[in-house]
Every structure is written in structure tokens, then in C-alpha cells.
Amino acid sequence: MIRSLDALRVFVAVARAHSMTTAATQLFVTPGAVSKRIRDLERELGTRLFEREHHSVRLTTRGRELFRVSQDLFDTLADTLTSFDGPADFEQPLVVSCEPTIAIQWLIPHLSAFYRAHPEITLHLFAAGGPVDFHGSAIDIALRRDDFDWGPAVYSHRVGEEITGIVGSPELASQTPPVTILHTSSRPSAWDAWYQRLEQWRAVDLELTFEHFYLSLQAARSGLGFAIGSVYMIEQQIDAGELHAPLGFKADGSAYWLLSPSPIDDDPRKCALVAWLKQAMNETAWHCAATPA
Image (cartoon, rainbow, N blue to C red):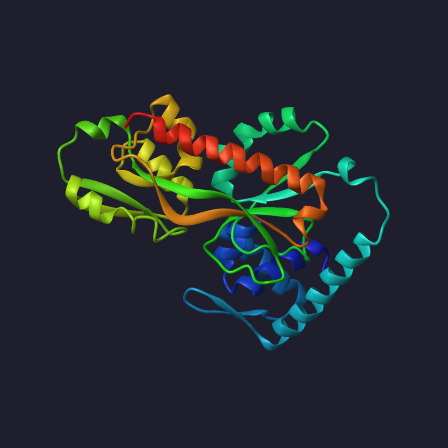
């Protein structure tokens, strides 16, 4: 017998993502924790649920059976919970899913301004990235960049464009070429818009790759090399002089959106969040653009 619904939640996340690493990112835990949870579940059930491949996993026959039943279970649970009467919308927390680096580096430091403008609304933050399982979770709305297709069933509202720059520690400014550039596996195309200007500016000696955006920015802050930084991830470090952007910032063609399983305009809390995010993200973009390189 399965002892907790949490084990099924992890199983469903892996089954949907076809990857323990991707599921770990979505659940905001380590890949090792996900792998152990799946091993424990398989041991508990006495059967293999996944066939492990090089970079992915696929369900076994018994795994597909459990996945079908688990999805039905979570869908039924979600439908049942929504049928309960509760307090008025403004008394309920709005559960907001946000990409981890944006949540830590930008949203949380700016939340006091949101609460000053909207003291009647309480936000509960859930740090995760990628596709959102609205029906299998308690998430009300999600802030995401448009680097995946969220499908026609999801309602969306654009809140800000992505603006990036080449960033490094102040000490790197005095180094002679060549330089080290830092990549991130979570956004492999981040450098594409900057390669030409990089070649005109500095020769490249070494390229290093980090698993997450946050790690590449920490490496840049430590003087290891130059990374691509989103203005929403580096605003505080730019202001503190810990990072600088020698070539300035520019829009990379992508944007941030709020995603919702129901019409955003039907919920005053979501409308308030949309309006505030649009203003706050625009202010950050202008602030960083005006900062001397």
C-alpha cells in the first residue's frame, strides 16, 4: 500500500516530464530526492515503474497503469476540493508559481511594494519552472517565460519582456582577453543574441556550463567568467556593484506571462497582480537600462 499521496505526486511529475531532473526542477527538490522517492515507491509496490534510459525515463506497463489511476485520483481530488464552500476570494491566499531564480532574486524583494498597494491580498509563493499542472496542484496562477507551449486551455496575460545583458564581476573589466563565458543548461540559447557583440569585444578562451541560471550568475558574481543575466535576476547585484554589464542590456525577443487555468479577468486578485507586475517589471527594466555600464 502506498503510504502517502506525496509519493504519487512525485511519480506523476516524473511520468509527465519523462525526466527525473525536469520533475525535480518543477517540484523544487533535488534530482537525488526524486530518484530516491521513485526507488522507495517501486520497492513498496514490488514492481518497476520506469525504464531508465540515458537522459530520460519511460513508463513500464505497470507504471502506465498506475499513472492512469493516479491522474484520475488527482483530478477527482481537485474537483472535489473546488466544490467546497470557502471564504470570499479576497480572504483566500492567491497561490503563485514562479520560476525559482526570478522568485528569489526579484519577486520576493519587491513583494513589500505589492502588499503596500494591495494589503487585502495574500500571496503564497511556490517556486517552480516549466509547464504547470493546474489540475493536479493548488496553483492559482503562474509567472513563466514563453519558452514552452502552454496550450490553448491555459489563459495568459503578457506582463513584461525579457531583457538580458552580458554580466561579470567588476574585477573582470580589467582583465585582458581572452575570457571565460558561462552557460546554463536551463536556458541553453541565452547567449545566442550576444555572440556577435561578444566576438567584437573579447575573445573567448573557455566555456563552462552550469545546471541552473542561478548557478551561472553566482559564478559570474564570483569572478569565474561572464554570464547572461536577466535584469530581473541581477537588479540587486547591479545596484550593489557586484555585477556590471559592460555592453548594456537589450530585449531578447521572449517575454514573461501570467498563466491561469481560468479567465484572469474573472478574479480581481489576478487582475491586481497583472497590473502590478507590468508596472514593477517595467520599472526594473528602465532602472537597469539607465545604470552605467
